[in-house]
Length: 414
Ligand code: ASP
Image (tube, rainbow, N blue to C red; front, side, top):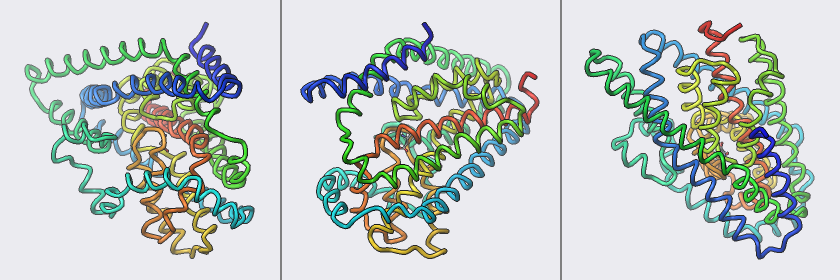
């Protein structure tokens, strides 16, 4: 049996267990799911370090590294701007707040008050530091070890550190570079092996995660913010089913079907874990093996993309910010919409690739525009479902970029 059959089985059985078993099972499902996510997250930092340093070293020629780096960043930025523009347009046209009464607002505010307060609290530091200059400054870590031990780890700083170490190592003479390159390669392979072992437990982990989602999500909540939910999901679907396949087809000639089929295990894992970081190990393997993107480009684009490229998250953040503003009676001006565009593109880059992190950065986007932060309570009830969807979009974007960059370097087999 193939992995995606087993994961799919875990998803279906998890949904059934969550719907049929009593609440007393929740701690068990919660533990099962958390163990799986923690095991995958455990590998994230050494994996990103080894894969990025290794990628930079094997790209070799600094001109090639510059080219690949530039193309990757341009694709990630353009796709984020397209995603957020679509989201802003949809949120303003559909105006999901129209279908939302004041009573519901009061009810949801009361129900999710504590959870919202916790998210707002964790966004405190990011909100204080969130200026363009602060953002740029933060990319260079004063202390890379501290960046790794923060919770969640400061992935942006870790990426920059890894790329710089790779560049420095590639400038060394062979005698000094080779042992380091061999060590990095070996560390990378050890991490992949570890992930392989962890993925053997994926069906069980996914079972626990899905059972928890179903158990903690009531249908009333979903109905009460249905218009918002559908608007966000609709834009994500357009980005996933139109933007990625069209750009992949146009720039690489790969058929959308081959693209989606090659990535199905990745999508299922992203969907059930809601974490780009937890999905990264599998994406690295699958994009190389199924989509035939050479290792250095796969590793470069995906290790960077897991943190930097989050179109699904950006779509959610823009729709949620506008929805909440409208519910609180704010009609956003063109300038405010433009501010949402700019801050969302940056905030999505700064969002940690873990479950629920998008909401923390949502607070960062809302603050400069003056949207009431307590409004986060309104969207929390359905956030896990949207998180699952946006994580699928996030990882699809990373893979699309890897395919396009490889094709543009003429390194994709015909
Ligand atoms: N869960 C998302 C990811 O890991 C981040 C977020 O939007 O919360 O890609």
